[in-house]
Each structure stands twice: as C-alpha cells, then as structure tokens.
Image (tube, rainbow, N blue to C red; front, side, top):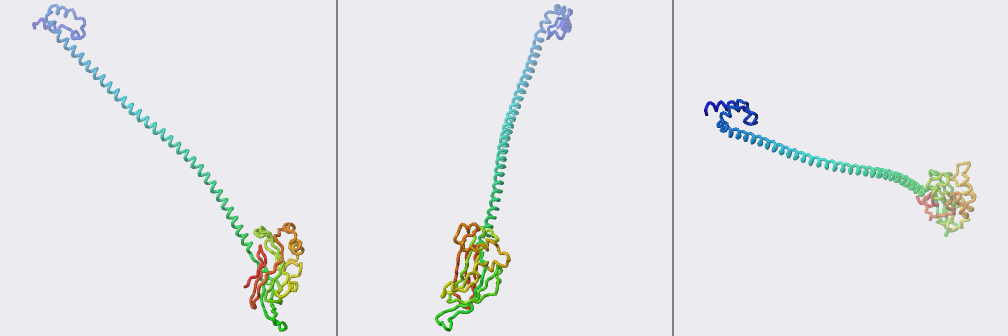
Amino acid sequence: MTPEDSAGLAGLHPCSLFLGSEEPPATSAARSRAPSAFARTAPVAGTFQSVNVFFRTVVLLVLALLAGWWTLFLRAKLGASERDLAARTAELTAARGDLEERRIEIERLGRELESRVAEIRRLETVVAEQEQRIRALELANRLLKVQHRVARLEVLAQGAPADEPGHVRTTVRFTELGADGEPLAPGRELTVEGRRVYVESLVIQFDDRYVEQGDALRGSSLCLFQRLFGEDQKPAEGVALDARGQQPAVYGGDTTPDPVHASLWARFWDYANDPALARELGVRALQGEAPFVEARVGKTYRLELRAAGGLVIVPE
C-alpha cells in the first residue's frame, strides 16, 4: 500500500463502515483518487457487519430461550401452585365436610344423651314409686299378718268327778290380755265338761284396705268373747265370758267408746245379715267363731286375733 492509499483510509469516518453515512468531501475525494484501495477494504467491512449481525442474532436467540425457559418455569411453578391449592382446597372442603358430619353427630349424641337422661330420670321416678309401693305393700302385708294376743288359757286340772267316774271335767283359768300382753283383769277359773275346750266369740273383720293403711278404728279385726264350753255339754250351757252387747275389755278403758264399734256390737247380727249396711262401715265379715283345743293339764294356750282374720288358739 502506497502512502496515498493509507492517507485515504485514514480519512474514512469509522461509522461509514457500518452505517453507510455520507462521506466527507475529503474522503470522497480520496476515494476518487484511490478507487483501487477502497475496493480492497470493502470485504473486511462486510465481514465485520456479518459478525455483528450474527452476535446480535445469538443474543436475541439466547434472550428468547431464556424468556421461553422462564415462561415454562413460571408456568410449571404456577401449575404446581394451582395443584397444591386445589389439593389444599379439597382437603379444606373434606375437613369442612368432616367437621359438619361431626357437628351433626355431636348434636345427635347430645339429643340422645338428653333423651337418655330424661329416661333415667323417669325410671328413677318409677323406681322410687315402685320402692314406695313395695314398702307400702310390705307394711300392709305385715299388718295383715299381725296377730294380737287377746287372751290366755291355762289348764289347771282335768279328771273325773267322784260321782261320775266315766265323765271328764277340765278346769282352766281364762285371762283377757291388753295390747301389751298384760292382763286387763284378774283371771277367772272356769270348769267345762269334757277334754276339749271351746272358746266361742263374735268376730268383726274389716276390709283389707283399712288394715293395709293401719286405720285407727278399722285397722284390725275385733273380737268379743261369748262363752267357754266343753265337748260334753251344750254351747248354751257354757260359762259366759263377756256380757252380751258390751264392748270387749281389750278395746275398753275409755269412758266414751267409739260410736262405730259400739254400733257394730249393739247391732252385730243386723250388720251380719245386711252386707250393704256392713260395707257402709267398711266391714268385710261379721260372724261367730268357736275354735277349740284338746286341753292338757299344765299347758298354757294363747288366743290370738289376726289383723285381717279370725281367732286362733296357739300352745305356748
């Protein structure tokens, strides 16, 4: 290259190689003066421009790849987040459903518990009523079976009189007793014909409901002794015990006897023959009784009156 060519290249503007801008007059003149030198530098400028375009393309491609990768990455993250959110939402929905089921179950159990508590209270009331009823029945049963000692019969002697060797006479001591078992009056020594001793009495029995309730006036049967006789004599020939029509000694001790009892004894056979009239006073039965025992010397017998029954003789 000659000095002139170098001077011409030096006079070129740097941007003219890439931008193709208008050359300065001096440069144009130089080129005109050295056309062969410029022709030789044209391939270098084209190569440089091609490299520049290539690098710009690579950079844009890299940027595009980075943008695509980042987009895919963000989409993947977003998809994962959406799936996680969907899973969490499903879990939350399931948890809410389970919570609602449990709430319903708790309400059901609460209602069932209230129902059972109410049933327990009802059963407790029923049990209390039944226990009270059982106690009342037990008391009534005991009252029905209560036996009052009303008299004592002691056998003092038994044998044949000298004038009648084939005949037997029995001598006894008859003592009426009070509710405490103590004598109401001194005993009476009585003699009857025969070995068997009969104790005749009138008995009034009241309805069981009065006995069960322990009614003050009608809570127990009443007994009025009539007479004592033996097997070898007529009842009318027996020995009188209580005066006819009077109130029994065991119920006495009061200057003003109960009018109900007094009326029953005064009209005993009227009530006995008129059940409707007897029922008005709560009477179940009015009848005569004559239990007997084959007496043995030295033995003592007690006469008992059952609250809801009649007169019995029991050896002591």
